[in-house]
Length: 294
Image (cartoon, helix red, strand yellow):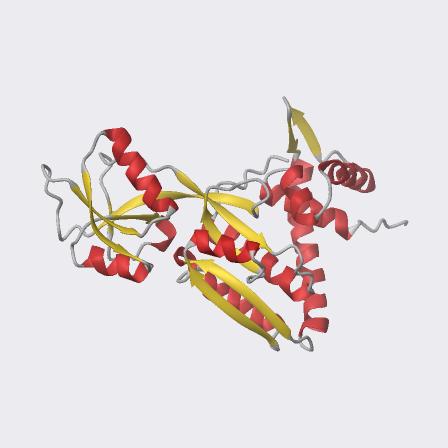
């Protein structure tokens, strides 16, 4: 019996395209062109001998066999990466400078640090927790290697790996007074969440006032806990002791989850840290930006 060895590089491209929602985003992350990714997928389909893709209008979707292929591809790549990380990682040393937005600190960050440290115990991690816009600037200035932020994704600024809902967060022990301007607790300007909040209130014709500003999310939570007002964050970062504002409040929509990696950071452990963060974000938050459309 003649066995066929499936190309691992093609399997990785398939999985990344599936996770990021298309050939274009996969090409951006892998440093290739969308046409090169498309050619890889055609070769992969020829190797396995079954149809992995189907057309629906202008979109390319997975067939049932394609969905099975993606599940197996994840397992194959996980074993491949685990073997290489185990063989190589334990003896590597260096420094990775990483940044996380405040909303990820209590959820994703511990998972990413633990998983990376198990693979690269001698690599030093320098972690920065800051506002999303400042982290993006640090990536551009070359002072960070990897960052995970929230905000409006712009072409050429990292890779959008999904979207998360924004919400009004309040302390129900301190009810709002219907006739008074809404008291707000926000980051100082500039802040994308501050912009979302004020724009939504203005569109709805609701009056508001800034009750407190703070440079840290801990300050925001303290103010909400003390009853100074409400704030706006992604749901993933909201303490369980707080409540979400009633449906009568204007909708805030969604915000992009953006993974940044400094282009000149070529060390294998930097790339691996970025992959770990991306994989954990997609699985842990069940990101709705990963549609499965290729």
